[in-house]
Amino acid sequence: MCGIIACIGSDDAVGELLTGLENLEYRGYDSAGIAVQNGTGIAVRKKAGKISELKNTIARDVPNGTVGIGHTRWSTHGPPTDANAHPHTSRTDRVVVVHNGIIENYESIRRRLAAEGYEFKSETDTEVIPHLVEHHLDEGLDVEDAFKTAIGELDGSYAIALMINGTDTVYAARQDSPLVIGVDDDRYYLASDVPAFLDFTDEVIYIEDGEFAKVRPGELMLTDREGNVVDRDVETVEWSAEETGKGEYTHYMLKEINEQADSIANTIAGRIGDDGSIHLEEFPPGTFEDIDEVEFVACGTSYHAALYGVQLLRRAGIRAHANLASEYDTTTVTDRTLVVAVTQSGETADTMSALRAAQDAGAETVAVTNVVGSSAARQADHALYIRAGPEIGVAATKTFSSQVVTLTLLGHRLAEDLERGRPREDAAEFFAELRRLPTHIEKVLETTRAREISEKYLDKRSYFFIGRDNEFPVALEGALKFKEITYEHAEGFASGELKHGPLALVTDETAVFALFTGTNGEETRKNAEEAHTRGANIVAVAPDGTDVGDVADSVLWVPKTHPDLAGLLANVQLQLVSYYTANLLGREIDKPRNLAKSVTVE
Ligand code: M6R
Image 1 (cartoon, protein in one colour):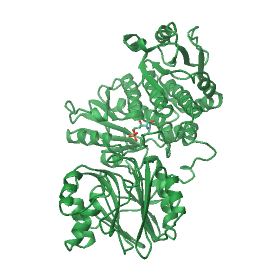
Image 2: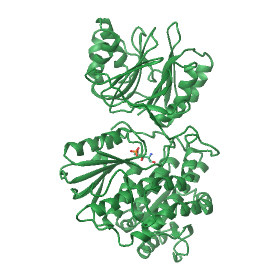
Image 3: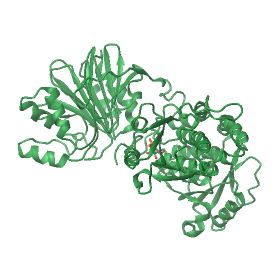
Image 4: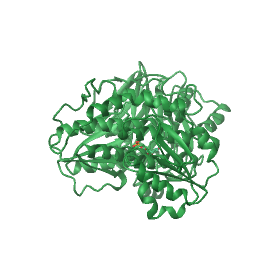
């Protein structure tokens, strides 16, 4: 998982590449590099560490150029060192490559090339690519054929941008890793993701798996696997560069938490009628009448949103399960199974692989995603967008709430279409509350005492999160967020499970966040009491006016709403607790160690 960028026909390739890399840094941030064609040759600069390190290196010796490629890395093969940073070059430096993905058969290619005298300068899988291309150039193939022949020898996933010394052309190819083209009159950009070039253009062309691009100033040619020219429309993306900036906030995560009233309003805009009717233009009534059951596949936060979705679908009589994408087993999948891939980025390799497995097993598929034109959106039979706007912080926040809201809307369509489905009896009340959710979130954001709670419990050694029903996924999500950005020990449990083992861990150095937002407050109170009597501090998260008894040392209040939605309000409080705790501990909030936003490796 890495980010790649190329600019073709720019007045200042170095400046634009560095901007693009900064915009892509959420995809990986352990080393970075660029290569620019400067008229006399290709200048390569690369450095271990953050992009700021690369910038410092470049500032000492700035190469000029109008065409270039760049890369920000999240290591898979070989540690983050200068040598392992991309771009990688062939032995004569004629071929320069950046790559996102994994070349699975790189060891056998490397052995073969090494036997022919090729020397490798890095431990990466990527380095075989420039050598292979040069090998085929030496055999007499032209650049296009050498590139295509080399690509044909690779197993695995890749988005590749390649330059040849002395030309102003960039060649690109993709297979199971994202790659988009930005168009600005005669200039072009290639990138792993649209935000990379949003400062320069919002006009994009999506490259499909198996396609090749040949791009020079004023000239773009896209061809398919068979060499046929592809004529694809240029699309205008709705995200703006301002939206992808931090604005007044110190961190993207805080900005994105605070955007949730707007992002949810956007998710539901035009989709809920005044009478509580649901309009999903993607899915007219009857779309799912041949479906028996729903299976979600997802990872991390998206999996927690899927677990929440399962609760809501089951309330509507729908048989539903959530699966971790990396553990997905299609044995019981039939052509009457609807497999819903929930993925913010639409690029997560585990989720993509589960989606393809579901399709191979005959399932109908839907991608619930935030990124228009993402791999999942294009792979699935249908795409349903959560419309949360760009999320840059590695910790998923606003996309969780938009995912859950989108799944409630999808659930309603399914309840109407499926034989077993029965739209909820309290639909009018539920959807009226759903429309009020942005207002309730604003109230949470205005009145939260999360910062105070973070300070109060900063010295604890463990943080537990407990809840029942739809609070359970929120407890899991609260713990994931907490561990991801604070690096402190955090676990989420179903409240009832505490006494079946985890209670042994509870001491007076434990803080337990207990969710009282559902309909099982009394049971949760008893479970919290069990932890309290063993010395834990209890932080209740509860609707205004709830009697949480004397078990709670502190309370984070949320506005009263429908119990099926209150978990989303509790989640905002927990996101803020994680944020403030991480901030007090001086953590790298937007780029937690060892992680990246988009996980495009299995
Ligand atoms: O893009 P996706 O929703 O498919 O990503 C899945 C997970 O990698 C992601 O949710 C991850 O768990 C988050 N960084 C957690 O905050």
